[in-house]
Length: 252
Image 1 (cartoon, rainbow, N blue to C red):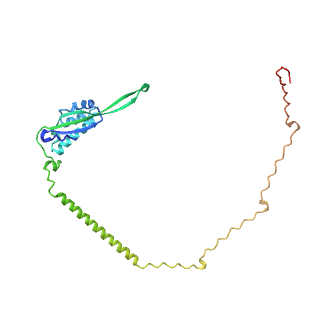
Image 2 (image 1 turned 60 degrees about the vertical axis):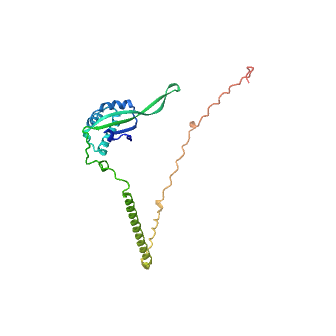
Image 3 (image 1 turned 180 degrees about the vertical axis):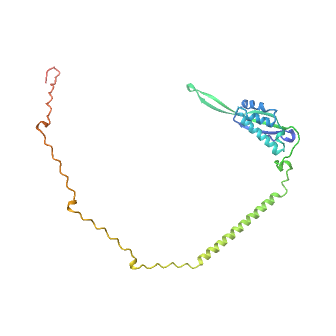
C-alpha cells in the first residue's frame, strides 16, 4: 500500500511497501543493505542466492515495485535502480513460555514494514506495449453518459431474455395440451392360452426301497472288563486324632 501524498510526478520515484511482515527489522535491514544502489537485475540476483530467510520477503516487495513502474508508469525494468530501501518497526506479538519453578519468560515476535523506492536511470517515460491505456491516456470524465448506455443495454438484454423464456413456456404448454387431447392408444389384448400349452407338472421322484440287508447293523456294546480282586481300591487308614490340650496343660 503506497502513501497517497507520494506520487511519481512529484518525486520521480516508484514506491512499493509490504506491511506487517513476520520478520524483525534488524534481520530485514541486513538484506536491504546488499541491494541498496544496485540495478534491478543485480538486486534480484543478490536476493536469489542470499542465505537469509528475509530475502524472500524483500524479493516480493522488489517485484511489486518493478511491476508498478512497468504497468503504471511505462518504465523499462532494465533501466531501474534501487534508489532507497529501508525497514520500519511494526507491532510486536507477545507470547509466553513456561519456565522452571512456575515462572514464565516473555517471547517477542517482531514485525516490520519494508519499503523500496526505484528510479529510472534514463529519466524518460517509455510507454511499452504492456502499459495500460489508463496510464498512457488521461482519464475520461464520468459524466459522458457511458454508464447510462450500459444500464440501458443491460435492461434491453434482460427484457429479450424474459420474452424468450415466455415464448418457450407457451410452446411447452401447447405441446402438453395436444398430448392430453390425443386419444389414448388401446391396449393389446392378451393372447388366450390353450389347454395343451399349460406346462405339465413334473412327477415326483419315487423313493428307492431299502433292502433288508441294507439296514446298518447295530454296533455291539463293549464288554465290561472284569475287575481282579487285587484291583479293588484300597481305602487309606484313618488319620490319628491329635488330642487337644486345655489351658491347664491337661489332655482333653
